[in-house]
Length: 338
Image (cartoon, rainbow, N blue to C red; front, side, top):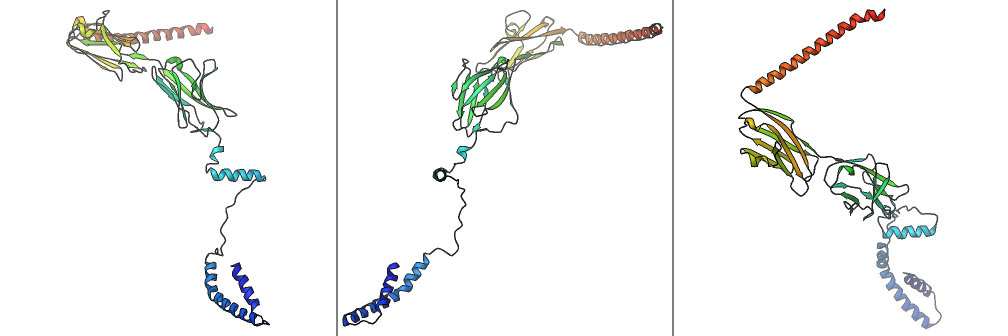
């Protein structure tokens, strides 16, 4: 475009009168060129205007700058190369906050999992600690390394979750576990673990008549069965031979998942009376005993009637004693006042 304007200026100056014939001829040639340029100027002008920006200026994004030119350069260079610039400088935090402690209930022998999700960890370190009974801290793991001689502990990292695993838990493992992040001040998330001791439940006494069917239930509570199936047996009296091998008409059903066992003895006889024991041998040794009474004919009804009569008599005797005591105190009170 500048060349066109310069050419126009030259041609405009060339329009002035000349002295010699050579200059006149040059002026005529220049005039022809000028006419040609004037003819194509509207096309060039229209083409040039079509690529010019619109009259409405583009809105500029406001960018906050620091006072230091070097910091501005670093900021601009990093921001353009990393769209998650602000996330890199976010402080570490626990997912879910620190509103309350986590409480875990576990059965003896079960595997316990402690979760600790930390976001924006960056260069900080995560460790698991256990608070002992005297409130001392025991270091269990540091990052992915185990720092305890107890091989039941191990740590695993899945995403942002630093998971501590405790296998084959027992009652002594109950206590407080802390997920620690090496910030300043340190970040701690507490987990309260309670491992329940195992127990065995069964009725203490049973009364039946001859010819009836004995039905007993034995349940093992708060004990994880593990991989091996539990071994549960039924015995009567002091014998060490299982009941189903001694007497016919015995049905034993054991559920290994719920660790419960049902005993049924059909067509009871007088000699079937005695102590019936439910014995667990693996994964640990436990037992419970029920006293079974086998009565003949209407003995059970007479026994129940006798129990009711004895209870009523005992209640009447207690009321009589209280009445006598009140009368004695009333008689002695005037004497005490004197």
